[in-house]
Image (tube, rainbow, N blue to C red; front, side, top):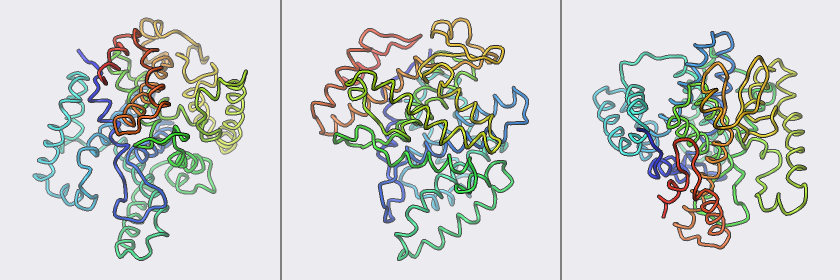
Length: 413
């Protein structure tokens, strides 16, 4: 039977420590968890463009693979963190050396991933099979990886004119970019000032600069973007344990990935502030909706991407008023349901189901781990301890489906 354990959650969180471009001068610290979030946002945009003409089942399969394979790539990267990309590419050129590396990584990850069940573990093993045929999902993930890495390179390029590796890195990016030109949507993404897709991709990238809990010290200082990726992964793992259908799994992943997108427009306003003034929470929500429409949805629709705007709106819960509402689609209309109904009646691809209550649990679980980790790292201030106490008290006796949240949090004692 599959389950969620502390080790899995902490393994995913460890990307918040991993610094990128560590041998280069950087205007701000760049972390692996932020890059992975940006990569998967780009992968979702490319998915929308490349799946438009596919049959429903093909689209479902492609979306599921992009979400799950993106997680697999991230977990693999966490283990080989000390291997620089040029060295890793050399290893991949030697099949025997690469096989040995993959087997070692799988051995390192088996203790934390095996709790998700045999099916999940076997899919993880199969993904790294050297004889697996390359698919569209691989191309989309590779292009998304390229975009996120090149976005970071543009940040540091001007500060490293003295670095004799810079020309070689720049040439490598130019060569890689040429290889993705035939992928639908890629050209538009690379032009942030000329296309709505590019503007949205660039706008999302800026969430890595927005720190959570900004009024208090923490180690590590997770960003809004990194937090979104953590919630996306946790939501996917929770979905696996709940035996969610493929569409529900992928909806939950991408909903987690985008759930704080409105905070790009209003900043990360903490709950006590929202609740300190009567009706302030509702006012902030109304402003977020207005800004989302003006800066995200409207530009997409004006350039012919209404389907992407509608899809993103569904993930963000625009029809029901919150991304934390459980909902389905039936006869072309969005309906709000309960978690129990979602689990027992609508856990089927035909309803396009999406969790809201479980997403909220994952959102607050990620916040709990952020506070817990900071306290364990010596930042034991009242605000962090109080936040941990509030969340543990809230979930002490709470279960959602097959998962007891209080028991999971008690693992962190």
